[in-house]
Length: 263
Image (cartoon, rainbow, N blue to C red; front, side, top):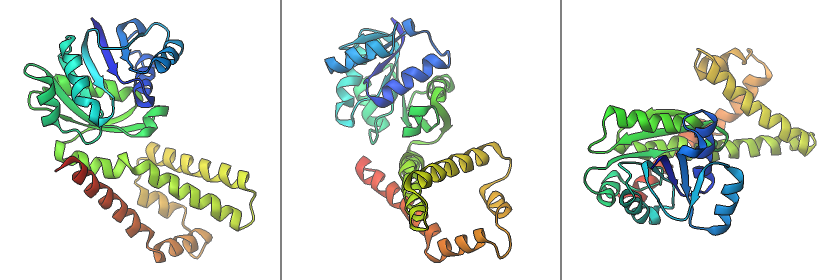
């Protein structure tokens, strides 16, 4: 029995695998990954030496279900049949009730919503425990997702809001960066220069916010001199309703998540 098996060897599954190894959560020989596509299995074998790369589940104490939503039931049943007693699902829109129905009695379920920056170890994830999940079970899930970023605990109904905020959030940031690059070109910068500056500006601002004891309001005020260039830029953003547009985006994505999940 492996300590943990990841069902689904796609980008997110592999990111979790790499994060767990790098963080020292487990040795490669304590882990397995199950991947249906033969070419991808060959690739994972090269990328993750020591990890068992399998075509179907072959026994693990716990599993991460990292497959497409339509494949979750089959993957969960197969994992449990092979001996898994804990299931952590990162499949979007698949409810705890559905997971528990597929897992059957005696299996603990935790549902999670990670986001794509987990691919570079900077993810933001939320977890919600199933009917029989204990503090130890949630701690187990936190330790796994914590290898690739930050983890918070929420109730299952709050996962739709998590989807709207942090799940879809990277796309909002990418859109802003695209606009900043286009603006840089418009005011006379070469495109590669505008891209480098915009990307580093967002990275630096996010790092400053994460490392500071102050909130975003205080940090914004600190770079806004009376009558200065930043004040002029912020006035243009407020006049265009950027703040309201971001709020509307999170609300719209949350409502869509609820529709897709039937909640």
